[in-house]
Image 1 (cartoon, one colour):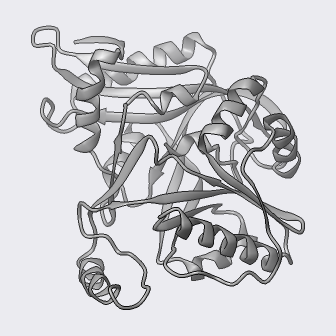
Image 2 (cartoon, one colour):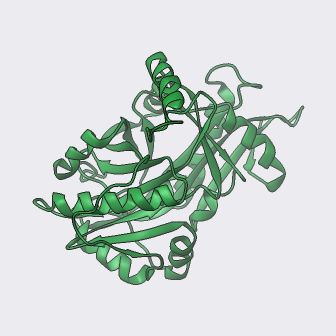
Image 3 (cartoon, one colour):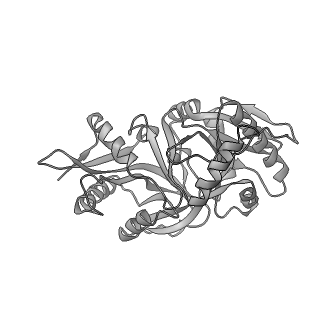
Length: 346
C-alpha cells in the first residue's frame, strides 16, 4: 500500500467513504460535504493522507490532522488536531493493517514537525472509534457537551441584545485570550488575515448582552448534516410531531435520512450570576435562526463549566464528546477545561 497526500482526484471517493462512516451508536450522524478538503482548508498547516492499493488503485482509508501552536498551562506547545480517520468499508474489513500503516504515516509526518501530542473529539457513544483511539495509545483528557436546542417558535428577550455580523479578528482574539486564559488548547493566532477570512465566511453573528457574548457559527454552506439512525422512541415521537406541526409550532425531529439545518453556538463568554444575559442571547439566537430556516442551535459547553450546566434543561438531547489525547512528549498540564476551536466542528 502507498501512503500519500490526498489529491483533488480523490475527492469523490473520500466523500463516499465519509457518507458510509457516521458517528455514534444511538444517534448516528452523517455529514455530506461539498468537498472533502473543505475542513482542511480552514487550517494553515494540514496533513491529509490516503492509503492507496498499489495493484488496484482503491483507497483503503484516509487520515487527517492540523498542526497547531496551542496554549497549555500558560505555555506554548505544538499539537495536532486529528479531524479524520476513516476506513473504506468497501475495501477493508474491520481495522485493517492498511489503516495501521496509514496512522503510522501520519505520525511520522507529525514527528518531523515537532508535534508533542495529537488530540481529537470522539462522540461518547461511538464505541468503535473510542476503541480504536485507545488501541493507538490515546486517553480521555476532558469532555465537551453539545446541547441540541430546537428552534420552532419565537422567544421573548428580557434584555437588549446587540447583533454584529462582522467582527475584527485581532480584537476578538485579544478578548478570547483574556477570557479563556485558564483554559487549555487555545490556539495561538498570528495570521489575522486568515482568521478574518474565516470569520467573514462562517460567522452568522456575534451577540452581546451586558457583559456576556456568544458567536453563531454556520458551516452549512459546505456540508449537509443528516441523522441516519436514532433510538426507536425518537422515531416514534418524530412521526407524531411531524403530523401535529402542520397545525402548531413544534420541534423538528427528523426522520432517518432527513437533513437538518444547524447553527453552532460557541464562545459563550459570561460569568456566574449572569444567567439572564445568556438567556437573552439564546433567545436572540433562536429568533435569528428561525428567520434563516435553522432547525437547531447546537450549544457547545466544556464539561467542566458548571456555570453553563443549566443549558441542559433547554435541550432535547445532549451529544457528549471526549477529548482524546496521545502524548509523544509529556504535557502534564493537559487536563481540565479546554477551549473549543470553531474549526474543529467541520
